[in-house]
Length: 320
Image (cartoon, rainbow, N blue to C red; front, side, top):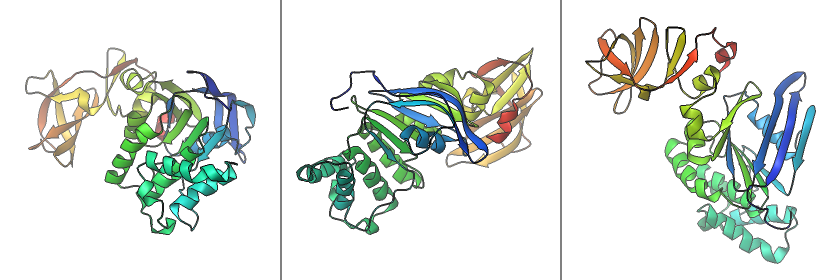
């Protein structure tokens, strides 16, 4: 593409795509579309096939079946932020040279991309002197400098400490969003997905099991499998239904209708995560200090959660 695509135009579409690694089918029958202006998160547990699907979307891997259609230039930033033993500026301009950007434009475009990621001050630095967070900023800037129509990023925040990741995530949330581009980011952490994505794709055991706005998926997960993956770790069964909860849904209340016994307490910075055993299930909540201790009896009420018809446990749950 030589001009900016219209709003909401599909730039990448895959239909019924399956990918094999040797004898194993890693991605199974996936269909999706990426549109201009979207920042899409691809979320799933370890081994779900996220990186393999990204490789197929970018053209690095040929699907065993299905079709992938791309409209425009595709840039992919792999998980490892490998940089040449040169300056930061040289690393970005090398990428532009590989893409055929005329020499007179390279330095300005490289500096603009670095500035977008808050890394322009790193331009004269040797790449080998960068910290992990700085390397990640340059890695993302290198992909942005190409000005692709379709940008694919594989876990760009991996391997960073919590503080560095939070700062990079905040800067990347605006830098990666563009009305003229479709962007897909593979994330492993749910908090990253919520901070970044307009739309979320959930891949489990190679299958696309849910998609939609992050808040909508969290409030209305389409299945027990998806709910469990999204942190609904508590469960009560009664009257032919299964109620799944997250810790915020479970409230300690001396006047609460449910009686529970504390079976485990894990210390947190400002409280404790409690495991609660009830007659018809097990719940989890977070309590402020001083928190109840294992063996204590407490009263709780449940506010929220999602209900499903009572059914046999889904076997895939054991894998996540």
